[in-house]
Length: 415
Figure 1: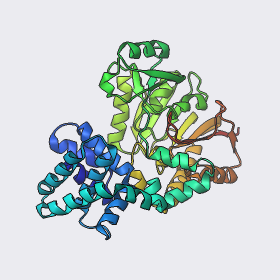
Figure 2: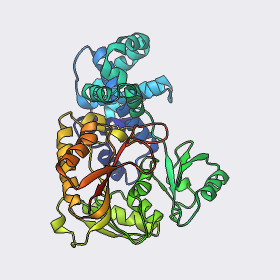
Figure 3: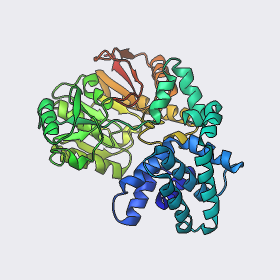
Figure 4: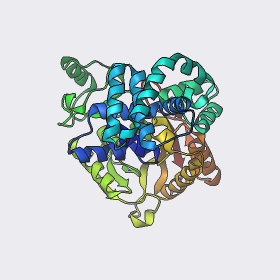
């Protein structure tokens, strides 16, 4: 409870959940325990709700951040019903001392016991509070509702859910049906989603996956696995993955076709991660640390037949995997992302061959980063036209039990 409260308090002050869990792991000299990860993720998925409960019980605005964070984590633990109530209360009170706030023990004890007594009345009170009810910032809810009049509740609910775990079979080493049989033999239940995708019934550690270390399989969301088919790959093509980390899409491209791939990544550490991911799978590419929006610093003058532009975005389509995103993003951030996305699109267009195709991808559900960027680019670029997607599915995938939220647009450059 102490470690979770520390991590959540730092996230509440504007830091990344991933970075803070990594920091906690480094402090302990090992990977973050599953219980810590679950407590932090669960608390942040229900952040709007647990914050509202603390405000209601305390009859005041936020107090000492660390103690509030401890209460948020304890409330999530109580609501999850994974732990006995008396255990949660006891651990929270004990954590006060470990956090250096021994004087708050009585307050924390009283707050949690008051919640247990008043739970039903609190539930009724929050029915009219959109942040507590939908567990998203108000601006986020408003934008999703405006964009998806019929599906907005589904989108928000998905953002609060546990994400699916989907596998991508490396078809250079194993057929999907053969690998499915291996999963069954290992006591793991999965079902095929088409192509190389297998959806696990329940998430498991990667070490439990047969052949993972040998490069027979990777973990990749089913939505992201659309990329090779949409790119219309052919052997011998020169292909660019312009924003490659963590490397899943680069690997899938190489598993799907014998192409010459260049993978760019802005940060050296992330570029190294891409190289390691490809090496595990027995794949080869030119991996470079470079800014894709500045071709003069890395381009050799030879155009690419295919370009994947999986551009930086708000991450709104994968918020359930990164629940801190909902609370760290601000409405004003979208304009900045859109400007950067447009700049990347213009820059990459310069290195695309005539009759070449560029696949624009985001993991966002906000139209400002998707249709709006593409339409503005098409209006300003006479040589560009948008093609129908080869798999016949919509450009915008909304998060579902099978996949996360993604946007795809396939652009062709006239001769």
